[in-house]
Image: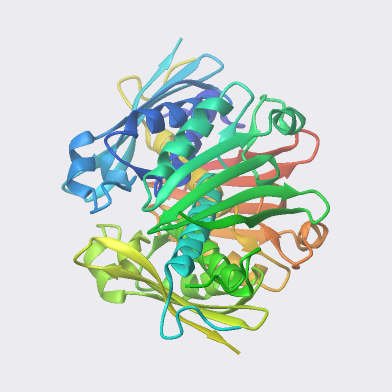
Length: 122
Length: 122
Length: 122
Length: 122
């Protein structure tokens, strides 16, 4: 297999690296935030706006699982945002490479899996 | 000076303790968040909603200094939320005690000072 | 009941407010940190050192529950620091008032309860 | 230019994505932490241990700039960890691909630049 850019780093490499940065940042900035079924949509909007500011972000869509919020709500009727509640779709565009990536909780692994969904040249 | 409640902790004590908790939480949860003049109002709303969920919070008002945002914006036209940009007013009501507290940057001290503004019995 | 300081804020008030700030800060700064039974002691030390820097902190002792770490470890053998694993003792001294406060998970409430344990004049 | 893996995602892609995740996570988990010249080494150690737990991390080296700590210390002799103080080297190994990545503050850009330093097949 030939390396498409033997002497260095390709646009594809950078696009993937940038997509990873954004998901790691979003996750560790916002988990722990107090949230409830009533405030979830405002928090989703703020998370999307915030990560959209970072370079090469084309789209961020955050969904917080309302059912999991309900299950986790304490006696004060809120809980902390955690990985198991998060579904995040991200599109990063670096030069002509577009990366679709996602955070989604894997119930079997007990892990908020971050994965690459698609890489394409535009 | 006589202690009003020599054997224990008064409602006033608890109200002040709770006010401190909320300001410390807000500060360390949200500083570092990417923000710009265009997204500041969404972030303010999300911060207010989030901290309002915590027990005994009566009111939270968050203002992010737009001028400081402009000064700190990097070449990608955003910056990270930091203490020098924050003005937060908080009212905690515990039983019949109301505490007004605030975060405001002290330019001389170079410090995001958290202080008690007023304690009253309602 | 007479207010011990009708015109303002007492040292006791400030000591309690400061104790709250520290616990809120510690909690929201460090929850979410990747941790395992092997790294827990290093994280405890860093948390203690960090919060000890803040004004009027006399002592911080952080214990992360090793049994809960084991239960929560994912297939990569680590988990995220969360409120249910934390036991934090804090002593704040403001002027001649000493406040002992604590974070400890309340299993029944499903809540990382922050409470005042003792207030004394020294 | 031929895509080395037209139907999917290569190990190189995944290694770069994972490297990005780790840097984004480290940055947003730990910035904001109270730190001083006296506690910096303990914090560096805790950050390294913590990120080393995440999958495919081979090495993390964190250096906090002591000179910048001194400049930023407030009257209580500490400051908050920020991007301009950080130098982080990371090696991620995914299958037979090794990625060297770094966080380093770019003084001209006023930006904590995260970049890929080297990608190699081992």
